[in-house]
Image (tube, rainbow, N blue to C red; front, side, top):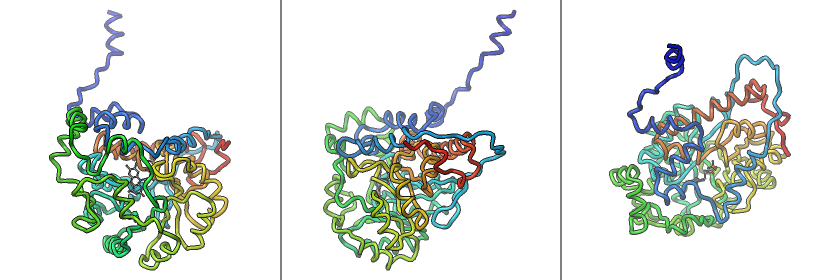
Length: 404
Ligand SMILES: Cc1cc2nc3c(=O)[nH]c(=O)nc-3n(C[C@H](O)[C@H](O)[C@H](O)COP(=O)(O)O)c2cc1C
């Protein structure tokens, strides 16, 4: 009798989850778990396009290592009844200090692509930056989101095209322009080189087996409309209707001569806030201030451009010391947890920015995967602040960090 009572008190059977997406999500407790699920679900070439970095991937690893090697110095007994994560970026409130980074070709992770990410970002209340090389257009993304949208600009050789895109972004109510300045030429992403990866991916003998081994992704891919560079469909610059390697596309279409004069030009054709993404030296942050830029994203493109560039997080404190009172700072690269956001802000960033974190969620579980990631980042941050004894974002400062 006693055995039965004991068993009855401990036996718990989870109800069987019939929805495959929920089943996948139920097995995940972190962004890293979603990365592993995405790795299983996506063909190798697609996963590597998202996951990989340039050359030896040292900068890719450094972005994560910089957070990992920075500890906290928590304070206790601060009597915090609740934690408030609200702050502001570009002069407007945001429920927690995060902006979603632009990622090109998002529909290869999931057919809903940018639409799914924009909807999830709007629900979470955080700004979403649409890439120039998005697979849904400026207008299509605005149509599904009443949230804050920023538009990322690459410098096409054809400045008329840039101007046209800027005007479209303004007409669609995008709030800010994000000029990416770390891509004079494309970094050598050797995983893509090895696989001969193109955009859109092609199906040939090499990829056929990969496709068959990932039936969920392949079925969704062939059923959905063809993937294109949606902002330039039908234009002379090429819209991806003919598969192209990213290196060929960027190296022929984008202007390596981009300079500070172009920043001034962009200012003259855009009324709203301007963010420079890819600043990697204190000296350049100082020049950005002189050019009247509202914010800089300290970023090495997620380790996808210059291998050997400094970790994004390592730049925050020195840049904040030099110009933090005159310009807003965005820490972009390696953010996988709310505690990373806390570290970035404590070091002096206004907000953090994340790319792969939401792409892993999207690749693992579609839009619900992105929701899950955004929820984790927020709840992680609340928990971290609570354990640090920081009641507000303003309380996050360097005294709470063990910066070696
Ligand atoms: C798959 C992928 C595509 C990207 N495409 C773009 C892009 O089109 N424009 C851009 O400025 N940055 C692009 N990035 C860089 C991100 O905006 C961001 O800097 C980077 O992802 C930050 O590092 P994280 O992935 O560790 O968060 C891309 C990154 C990834 C992973």
